[in-house]
Length: 385
Image (cartoon, rainbow, N blue to C red; front, side, top):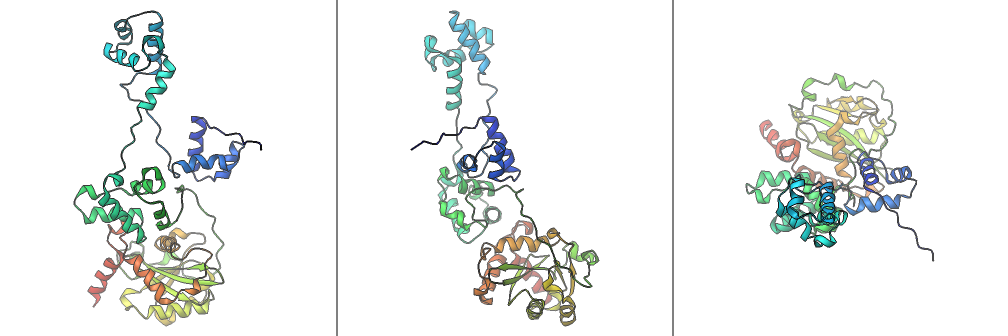
């Protein structure tokens, strides 16, 4: 059987690989640049869990390759250690240690000595979660509750004054993805929202779909100023998430508190969606449901019937502009952890949807200074009672 030839990439090529990966290029696209298969790129990316390793840097105090060459030539010319150190403007003890640790006067070679110096200089920083078992236990517990690393980091900072129990979200990600750290079990990667085994570039995006036309749509630019600045509660963003077999869930997010409500709908037909949204709106006081911002999906084509029944004005975003409903888009991404794409959403009862919404509402949010949406929403509910 013919053995496959192993492919090597030099430092410059590896730098290109990481730059393109961080720009969001796929492994196939990167491999095509080198006229190779994606598997040769995957090994480099997977080794560090998709996190670019820091480039090694040489301390200004260390001997340079040029200085080592001078030492080697000086030894060949039978110069003394003091004479060599004087030429280099270095301490004699520095040159003496360099020669002695690399084979002595007879066996010293500049190139070999430089490579050995790089190896000896490796000082991997101990993983904080590996050294602090109590902190690792807290992080693992919150990951199992589907909290994101950023939420965990913010909650720890807000809850504990002891800095030994503080950790950055980047450290949590690195500990999960770089398994050689050994502080968190690999299975906890499945608790992450994306469930990926590699860190993916934030620039990797998906192409959007076309949006339907809405008759007599009130444009988002006509919303009151209080909606835009999020200062006043009671303004919501909405959308549908889709599953297999023509199954859908309506998602509603309050802009001020990021409070989430999930509504079971029979289909994406406008009659079914409008009827479900009208029923849901009756569960809240008028002060807590003033406007609704939606995309241009055809499920809201009968928006006039919703406004007539609820006195809630519906505003529509521009086509292909999901950032105009940023809170809702972010929530839909969170929900895919519970309702993966391609699964049947009809199997979930309204009770199940309410349980998921409650779990999201009890997660601390960075944008709320790590308060939970439930805390922020309930504060306003208390003032309306």
